[in-house]
Image (cartoon, rainbow, N blue to C red; front, side):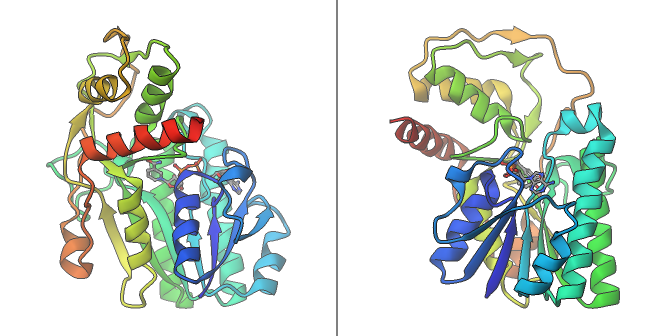
Length: 307
Ligand SMILES: NC(=O)c1ccc[n+]([C@@H]2O[C@H](COP(=O)([O-])OP(=O)(O)OC[C@H]3O[C@@H](n4cnc5c(N)ncnc54)[C@H](O)[C@@H]3O)[C@@H](O)[C@H]2O)c1
């Protein structure tokens, strides 16, 4: 298949591009390098430095005629979206629309979209949230993810472009951007390995659903299949708090830092955990890497990358 991975110089997109290339697909990567890095770009991929909002996007897609787009480029910092909702919408909503319009004109058959289980449901009525849970995102970022899902439904209904929306939990692993949804893992590892003191915001009892990058990549491989379509949580169903992450990483990095708590961040969602039962039942996907094991793998890989 000829596949375009947007955001393929970033954390998740680069791992997906690597896996698609290993499977024998022809992969092009589009990224404006705002947070992504050239060193993440697979040497066997064709790279184009382009913004989602560039007027060249349409001609590029029309000339390349991709079968499928994996859309991972985004402004992915929830706090930035709160500080500057217009910038967030310009990248995540208008940028997405530019891509879908170009996809329509160039005959793309399917789009895989990186959505967010961590923000799309908002404060949950029940735990874990399944895909039928009400969507009440309480950040502009979460709203932008929901808007993309609605647009993708429109392009499927009216223009027959199929889509899979993968609502990720908080993804962690090598190459992780510390400013993203699962930023705490990357921040703590970097600080602990460089002998700095990490700060736990508030009581450290805020919970999230952390998922290892390899499990996310497997979900994206399954999503290439024709019969996979629709919206799925890509999560673990396990709720973990920040204090646990601190203690586990302190052990894994042999750090002698203190457990230091700073003031809580205002407006932070208290609990988030989502069920993956639908994806398992329909397409046999389930997370395989338990959190402590994934943290161990991540610390080993980060140490290796620093050598
Ligand atoms: N990391 C998580 O825990 C998590 C959770 C849920 C959803 N997601 C989503 O997964 C996707 C990938 O996230 P990530 O963690 O790999 O982040 P990342 O910042 O590492 O990757 C995003 C990439 O998009 C590129 N980009 C940003 N704006 C662009 C634009 N206007 N035009 C072209 N390229 C642009 C960046 O340079 C970067 O390489 C994002 O859509 C994010 O919202 C991430």
